[in-house]
Amino acid sequence: MRTAIYPGSFDPITYGHLDIIHRAADVFDKVIVGILKNQAKSPLFDFDERVEMIQEVTKEYPNVEVVSFQGLLIDFTREQKADVIVRGIRAVSDFEYELMMAQTNKQLNPDVETMFLATSAKYSFLSSSTVRELAVFGGDISPFVPDYVREKICEKLEKRRG
Ligand code: PNS
Image (cartoon, rainbow, N blue to C red; front, side):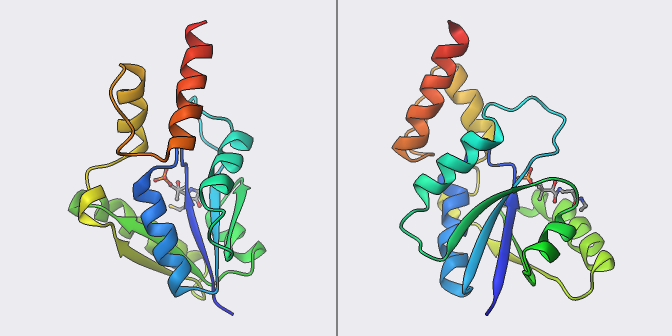
């Protein structure tokens, strides 16, 4: 049984993340989407909202689970009895940070491998921060996130505007 962790902030989840999740779900027996809780920056969605949204948009994949975590990714990986960390690489600019993370995690636990999936070309420019910025300024985010997520973003921004 091969279990992979796909970790990230997912604030919000985009089609780029979903592309990696469904491809990882084809390769591994189980994929755990791990939502990092220990960020300093003020998020658009809290962790429970992110868990709920990701569960909703991944419900068609029976071998995908969504869990939030605090602390080190490598400890979470051990807790979940996973042996692989999956990360998407969009461009060369992602690579330096991803390599550093993979090597740090390998140093912390040599039994855990990091595997990179090349993001599909049509999502190579896409990020959660781009989606957030577009949404704040009224841009069309429908090509970048599922309808369910787009509606949640609109509700959240409307509430914030009062
Ligand atoms: O979607 P992101 O924000 O690029 O995801 C980054 C994430 C969550 C994978 C990374 O920040 C992380 O693993 N944080 C947990 C803390 C940790 O384990 N740090 C040591 C590895 S360098």
